[in-house]
Image (cartoon, rainbow, N blue to C red; front, side):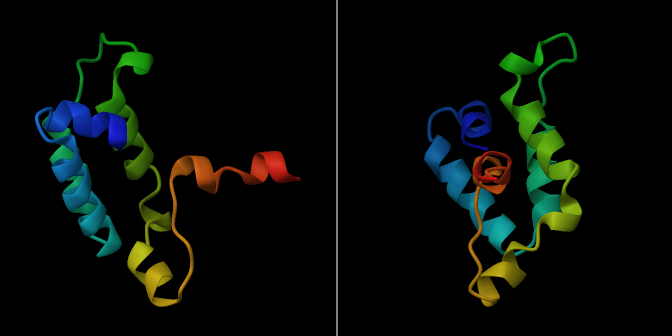
Length: 91
């Protein structure tokens, strides 16, 4: 989401990011996905140069796994995709 924030609000990406994080932590992922929609890169742009599309796809494909509010209430850690996929390297 950090790379997408630079496209969505280039003058203050940290502000955009903070708002989206707050929404995610409240399980308002549908709003975050909608907020990304207006900034989606054109289909002709390669995935390596389309951070908004990558973020949109990541969140859209994982809506069943985005219970950040529940995880926080249970004292469980939440993290980025990099942290969530670390299991590939630990075993």
